[in-house]
Every structure is written in C-alpha cells, then in structure tokens.
Length: 533
Image 1 (cartoon, helix red, strand yellow):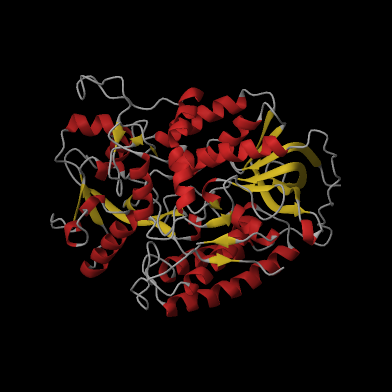
Image 2 (spheres, one colour):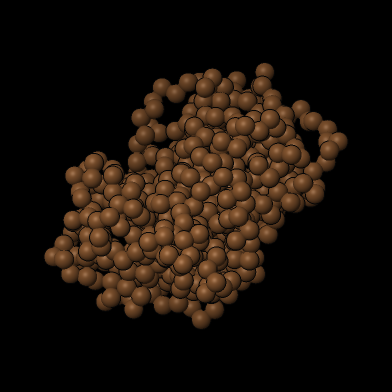
C-alpha cells in the first residue's frame, strides 16, 4: 500500500523561490516543502553575485527595464520585465525583513552615505544596482529563509525526497493537479502526496551539460514533470553559459562571480593580453553570451584549455574585502588572486526557458504553479541579465502566494490518490547502464548543443537523444526507481526539448548561436512547444 501524505500546498523545491512562497503562505495554509537533498543544497545557496533592484537615486525602473530588454535581445515580455523591475525593491525589502543582511557602504568608501547599501555592478547593467552579501549572497538568502521555514509550525520539510511525477485528474477539459508521486530516498519507497495546490520550484536543468556551475540536483525535474503532465514550455534553446568558472582539476564547478568584472577584473589570454575590447565595446561588462562566446572563440583559436580573469591590479585589501569566499577558495588551491590571474572556462549556468506561466505563476493545468528557474515568465528573453534570477524567484513567489491565498478552498476534500504500482518491477541488476547513458548524454549535449551550434550537430544530438529515451523508458518500466534513474529520465526529456527548440530557431540570437544561421531575423518571438498527449 502506498503511503499517502496530505497538505494544502505542496512546494517541490527548496531554493529561494520555494522558501519565499512557503513563508508567504504558512499563515494561511498547511505547507509541505519537498527537498531532493538537504534543504540548504541547491543553486540558490551557491549564488555569489547578488540581486538586482533599483535602490540608488540616480538609477531608475526604466533603466533596469531597458538593461533587461537589451540583454534579452528583443524577445523579452516587456510587461513582465516592467512588473519584475517595479516589484524589485519591495522584494528585497521583504528579504531584509526576514533577516537577510546585505553589505552596506563603509564609512571610508562613502563618508556621506555610510548608511546606504553597497551596490555593485555586473555585465549588462548601466548602473550599480546589485545588492549583495559579500560574494556569498545566495548563502545568506538560503540560510536565512531556511531558519525561518524550520521554525514555522505550519511548514513541514521532507528532505531527501524526489518528485517522480505529478498526479492530475482525468478530465481533459478541466485538468487539475492533485499532487505528486514522490520517492523517499531515506526508506527507498514510493509514496504519494495530495495537495490542493502544487508548485514547481525545482530550478533549472544545467546538469544536462558536461560542465556546469550548478550543483548535482539541477536536473530539470520540474520542466520534465510539467511537460509529461501536459504543460507548454518555451525558449528551451537559451541555455546561459557563465563565462567564468574556475578551471582547476580539483574543482570543476566553482563559479567566479560576475561582480569580479563589475569591480574591474579583466579577461586576458595566456600571454597577458586583453581580448574583450576586440569583441564588444562594453569589453568585460558585455552580457554573458557575448563574453562566453569570446572566451570559447579564443580557447579554440589558440588551442588553449582556458583563459584568465585578472583582478590583481586592484589593492589586495579591496579584493579580500569584496571577495572573501573566492579569495579563500582559490588560495586553498594554490592561487593568490591578489597577485595572479585566475584560470577560467565557460560552463552551463542558467536555463532561461521553462514551463510557461502567467504573472501569478499559474501553468495551463489548474492548481499547478511554477516559479523560479523552472518557469518561463518572459523576463529573460534570449539571455538573462546578471542578478535578475534571484529577483525573479522572490517577485514571482510573492505574486503566486497572493493568488494561491485568494483561491485556496478552506473546505477542500482530501482525495485518495491512485496507488503506485510496482508489482511488475525488480531491483536493477545493471546500474552501469544508467551511468553510461548519463555520461553519454552530458557529453554530446556539451559537444553538439553547446555555446556554438550547427544544424548537423543538433540533428546528430536529436538522433542520439531519441535512442537514449527509448533505452531509459524500457529501463524505467522494468526496474524500481532510484535517484540516478529519475534524474536521467528527466534530463533526457529536457535535452530533447532543448534540441527541438534549437532546431526551430533559424537565426542566431542571444544564447543561441548557430553557424548555419549567423544573422538575426528582423522579427522574432519565443519558441513555444506544446506536448502531444
């Protein structure tokens, strides 16, 4: 018999979006947060740079909107961009009220305004508008919100639980989400959970690539589950590659924040010469897609394994004060960033597309919402502006909370969910099959669907992903679920969506660059995919 849990609201994911939503709902509903790993593990915790919002009197909402639109390269939803920017300051003030401590100007830096927040600048921004907690903003946000969540009597946290699939009603004309099947990694049993409202806050899918800045849990679970349930997805071809991940054999996924370049770090070739001014007039402060392609181009042109990020021309105390985490991390690896440049390579970082939602976070399925990186709001367009990601999490979590509170049925009837049937499956006897498919998927996605693409590469990738899907589905039908099998199943689905979206876009725009269509079309729009059920 499948163990069934019940709640008013099920939140799948425990990053900034999910935790913000939980805290905004807990006084109105019984909430369950599903966390695939420990509650502090996730992309939010590792976010370094900060959160963009208009706090400076010389800045403006209009400037933030314009910078976002420019970075999005013509296909942002202007109404959504305006909505996000307008709600940015109140979202940050809410975080501050929860106890998140952002850096303030020191008296020495600004003796007249030492009470103000220290604002940094990142690529694509026309003003200093990034609030941050040194170079570990995500950690400050995550740990503060986790503390608040764990102390709330109406929030239950299920740690080490994977969501397997959403459970929906059979009424195709009025399909509703009524919960999810979940895999308890502690007991290795499949359970179910009924909820009046279900929210996907599972983050992105960068683990589909061989090299990524993301933690292991970023396997596209929410996107894949929503697609299988019947939701539309959009703009899956736009995968942001962060230009500067540390290149070192002992740490293949360590991100070097955009704020380094915002504070004056320069990109150099191995011979010490700069190259960004040759690619863009904004040089090191160009948007991430431009910088990532420039680094990739120079690496391939010169046959080098990496380029270098150099901030050693700044005072040592300045570097240690503003980037203490990175300084200590790299020093432990034998690199003193106050005296020498840091070796860097691009790595998959952010999924700009996702599950299509409206301004309240609603999907096309009743009572199913999606917020954060798992979603497509229209904010990011063809490329995400730095430090708009955590902002999107908080803004849309609060908007979704308002809608959920207004529509939550206080007298809802608990439904007995269908029992999970594993009567015809056995324990896997060849885990190596999963591992082999896992490595093959991530390698060909990196080689064929990476920073620079061609139609032939994409077609070759699609052929491979179709074969993998058949193999994995056969495996899924015959063996009991495991963490690796569930993540691989989702990653292969997301890989197909990325490839199909990339093949549909017959131009180069933002993060999607193809040698077969190097020019931009005069008129372009989001790539929308609809499942055939």
